[in-house]
Length: 364
Image (cartoon, rainbow, N blue to C red; front, top):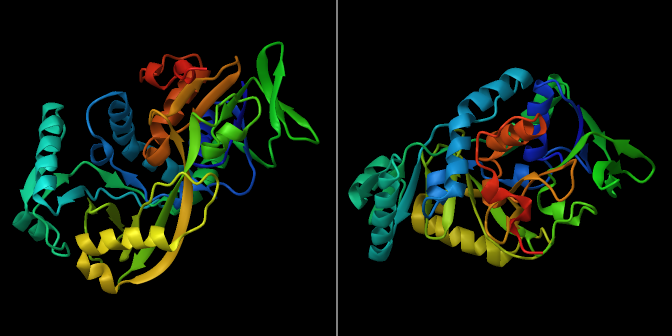
């Protein structure tokens, strides 16, 4: 089988690595360099429990991917020889008001009822676990939510994909090639590349690809502004979320803080208002970081869908497979996406029910 993957972000690279590892001939097409867009801009939280507001297909998909992550990371590191910063840090969602404490109590109940590991902490215990916290009234500890360092991961994935057998091409895809009602390749302008199947994994740009038939009203870019703080010594051990911000600590003293959610089209500018909102949350949750150096700022464009579920599986035409719309969970969902897309292409029954994520769920 010959497969073309459009997009060199984490989804494209993960799918390519999985397919090539199963003996498929894979060519990855990327307009710039692998991981140049939202993949490297992410914070790297592997936090299905922290992100979820209740049970459902999205939580099930995220939990499956979190379960796959340790073995997946080991394989990527073995193939590439590059360490990716996977860290079983756990996460704390903190409450700074009484109303937020009640919300955390409700979250703890449904998570426990679902069989998930969590622990409610009072303010004193939260401060004991994380002395750098400010004045908090309580916290929800999620020990099974972890993190990875996306720039390191995106340095490793192209090497892993290449060593598994994938090939790479740089160029702009003008559109998909259709013959007799089937997608048979891609149009690069000067030439056409033919394949048995095409996987569109172009993130927020998937809706711009002629032939993919993804309505821009269904999938849109959502800007997320972020910043990096540097301290001499690590201030936090856990991922910490609260006061409208999240803090992802690295072992070397860096802290990744975010993030805004803005529908601004394909505008990647970093703004004073966006950074101010993030820093206000940082200072409220962890005042000790108020003296940290702001070492870097950036923004990424995440692929948002109107129902907050990714688009996975067969597209509108035979020969087309879609792996896009992962929004805030792209880093987390890479292993399970690679698995189910590869299984679908290889004629195997996917390990996850793909019905909730099907292309045809949106009204035309």
